[in-house]
Length: 243
Image 1 (tube, rainbow, N blue to C red):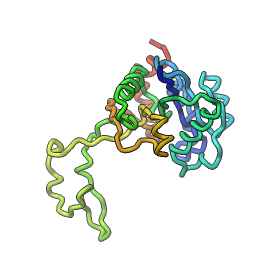
Image 2: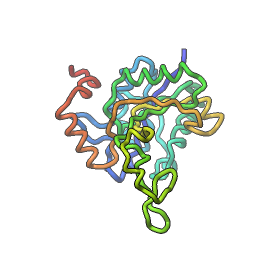
Image 3: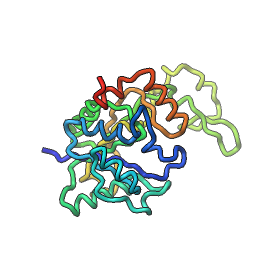
Image 4: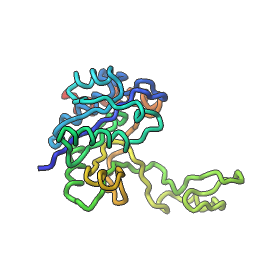
């Protein structure tokens, strides 16, 4: 049997959407959507929230998550990396003899999830041990091959090959490779790889394709999700047993 723990990061210092992790979305704090989805997983043994806030800690514990420590200030900044809080969590778990085989990284900013999809991702990753990590993605509505950068001389150039002749970019998207964006739905991390390589994902990452989902980075994103839930409550009903 594998030991599998979910880790939900919930830093309190968000500037784009202040206190977004505890903002009300559809009648529930944003972070509760992720906690409930993990609690409904059949494979996740424990749900840990990594936060630097006493207020967040108290809320998440009341919602059924474990918050056994507070994240240090030095790794709770805008510039702090995911690797830092993951390593901090693993070090704590190791000290308390409860380090898992796999960490399921669940970002609260992608709240609309199906717990069965989380379990599907875990199963797919565990079944193929040659992969270093799993990341969820969805197809971009417009392939990145049709996008541009601005060159040093101020002209447009194509992404990837940096060509200044842009006419080929007007071809239909079927002429270009599909491109995908990471969406925060679910990532699965192998703790042995993190310990050995000091990396989260490595160079052989399994793709896990989901439907297109919205990730909250701005007030506009938050308002869009509120609207989306108001017209289609199926995701809310599923997570909070409202069906």
